[in-house]
Length: 233
Image 1 (tube, rainbow, N blue to C red):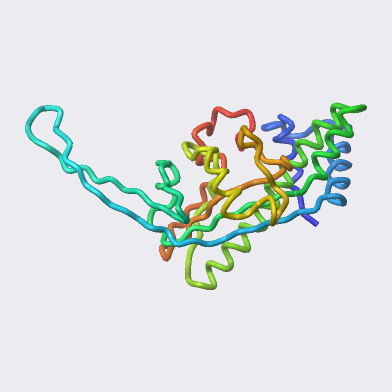
Image 2 (image 1 turned 45 degrees about the vertical axis):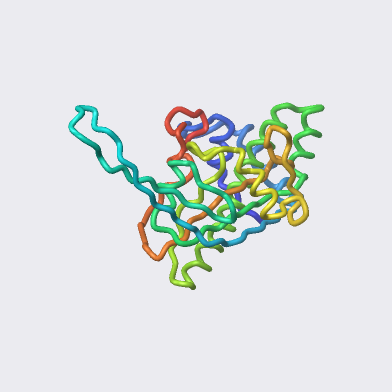
């Protein structure tokens, strides 16, 4: 059973910063958590790939016209994917390997939401929040497995980084779908707009390094919308 942090559900419902919610809402959240825990069919897949780093230099004219400055350009690739995200490059600095992961709760959360929408929109909204929190919790569980496996090999894991964080484009979802065989392995497909079905699914990469950076920033903290999004932690 996937354990769900009730405070995370409240945050998704828009109660961020509220010390205590009303009893009726609290009971509804508990009910939705219990029902979803009993029905979800969580799945996951992850694969590890070597990171190939490339370095190049070019001469850039100084603004004052006194000459040129040598500018270093850094890029990396894995499994045929060129990393062009500056945020992700910073996250992966010093890493020799990268893990691609995908998780899903299955179609059940979406079915619960659609069923509730017919008769009780507040319950449907609560199911959505519970599903979002539960998907993150499931991703956290798989993340922990990856971290432990890395430790057994003498490696340290960086915070997971998902398409859509910062300047890491959603277009890379197509690569996740293809490389991880998501439709076949865990039943997750992409729409034309790159949204996943079932909706309570998450993709991410995790860098692995011999260097322990003690970096614990992840998720909201690394996103370019940090501090501006209504759902920020």
